[in-house]
Image 1: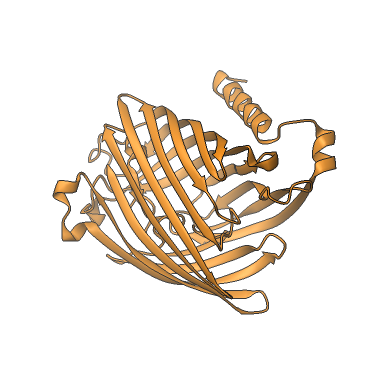
Image 2: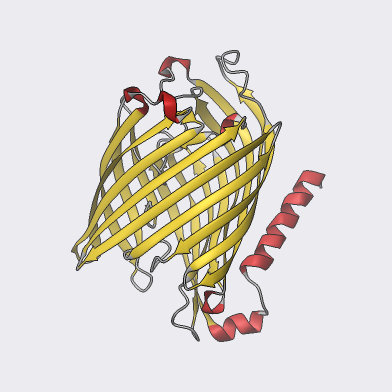
Length: 354
């Protein structure tokens, strides 16, 4: 067993201690744990079609109705792009929400595409590369007052065994590296449901200090607001991140993907600044079937002084929702979105995009 593997096993054990504190008897007595194992069949521009398995654990505190439901998801996928993905993520509230923990552990063997830095990268310079990826993000928060949390986080990202198929001389920055980061996070977590929010708001301000081949600083601002009118929900999101310094190519701010800008390949455009404004309308049609329409405008840029018209990327899409867990209001989500420059995406996932 090599040293890297031993370190990763130790990280998994450490995270499990954070996510599931306390004795097993106390968990059985005071908490209701629901397990939803389902086959995973989906599609995204980054993976194409994928198959696998997902197990969603929901943890509800029976003695405290004010504590929101916690969740943990373990997922394994194999994609038509010959990608292997193993990931676990969690959101855990302690009793009376005095403490909150969230994070993700991700490992993948991942063929990917790279186009360079900036909003005007040429599609003809597309580089196919493959890498082994390991990513850990773990944050622990203390409830200051009501739903205001102050937290600290650690992160570790490792890109290794990078192999090129062509155009390998175009981008010298495309090389293996690892990054360690430490963050201070202010969080106002008011959402009634983490996976499928329908009411109130979410605000996060995150400052991270990162060490790779050089030091760089990253700040993130994320604000989400939800309005409910009977069976209709209007959700909005403003997200911005900025980077100072010289990050590795994989840690630039990325435009695209299921969680930020549907309709664009995640990483098709990247730079030191990324801003997006997204809106979504959701409604129930009949029985367990729902409908969604969404869209927005986004941009990546090097700094505020050189933003041009071509930096802005619109997106729009439609989706269906299938209610799979009535008690926790969890949906299976199917979305199709389009962007500019012939970009588009089809997505299948659990829970809402934001």
